Each structure stands twice: as C-alpha cells, then as structure tokens.
Image 1 (cartoon, rainbow, N blue to C red):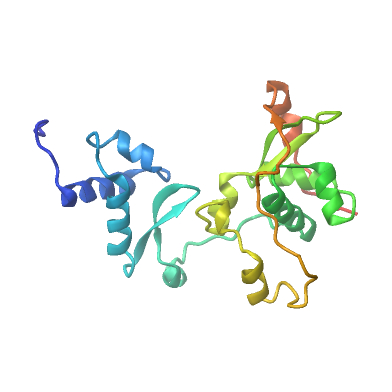
Image 2 (image 1 turned 45 degrees about the vertical axis):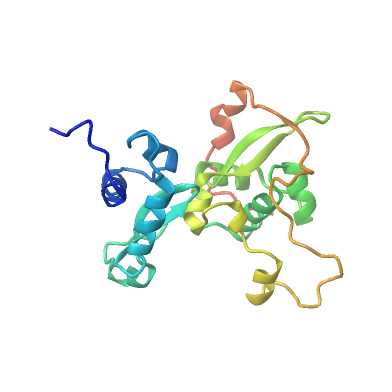
Length: 222
C-alpha cells in the first residue's frame, strides 16, 4: 500500500509517467497525466526527460495531436512482420481535397472546389469523414450557412504531426521538389485557422446525422 505522504522526486515522477503511457490503451495528453499525478507535478519536464532517454531505443516517446505515446522506432519498422496495409487507398482527388482542407481549414465545400478548380464528388468528402481524416467543424456565418470542414486527430496521427503548425511550409515544399523555385513573388503557403478565418456557428445535432458519412467507395469522381 502506497504512502500518501510520500512526495516523489523527479526520477519517481518519470517512472510514473512511463508506467501510465505504457499501460494506456490510447495516447495521453499532459492533462490526462497530470490528473493521475500529485498536484503541482511538472509533467512537461518528465515527458522531455523520457523523450530524451528513449531517443536511441527500439521504442521512442512521441507527441501526436498534443497526445503522448510510445511507438516503434521508424528504422525498425521492417521487423514488424505482422503489418497490414491500409485496406483503402485515397484517390488523387481525395488527397488533393485533404491537402486543401489541411491548409485552408476551416473551409466549405465551395472553397475546396474553388481551390481545386473542379467540382467535388460528394463521395470524396464522405470517404474522408468515414476514414476519420476530416471532421465537420461548424457553419459559416454567410448566406446558406454552409458546413465547414477541418482535419481530425486521425490526420495528425497518420502523417506523424504533433500539430497543424508542423505542416510543411514553403521552404519545406521547395526542398522536397513540390514547388517551383520560380514561384510568383508574394506566393506563400496558407496557415490553417489563421487570424483572418471567417466566423462560424457551432453545429446542430442534426448536422451529424448518418448521411454525412455514407460509404461511396465504389463511385468514381469525374
């Protein structure tokens, strides 16, 4: 039985954080951890210490979508003989749509179509919603009150991003050969949810009805 008067030192706090993360069924936020530790515990310091300690091990501590988890070191992925490929693959149209939402969120269907330059199949958005990459965020305060879309935590987890601020910027894209170095003057990569984002209203319960996530996997986009 533990002594409630015992005040753990830094090493003991690290042990407790390590145990909580190891036993958790899903990634934990710093707040989740703080709720299980003595009041006033410096959770961030413990996480940074554990991250450094596991940096060169077979598993490492990583932060995805502001939540922490242990994961296999990327260079040892070849050892995972039990791996399975994702049963569904995103089409070019779906990847383009996902990229537009990631950088322009929150955005409406009309705004997605304006950036792509072509109309968008209803099935593309439904598939992204069903796979958990995209979520319904709100309704724009404009005539017709169109629904807006944003990325979900699954998007960050799938691409290994701690947050939207880690999306590749202009220089990253140029270095990867995704943008021409002769891009027009003043060209820049949009920042998701920037200060100029239009105001929105919360979703109504009926907006989350099942028809928003119907399966259109078998349909082709024109």
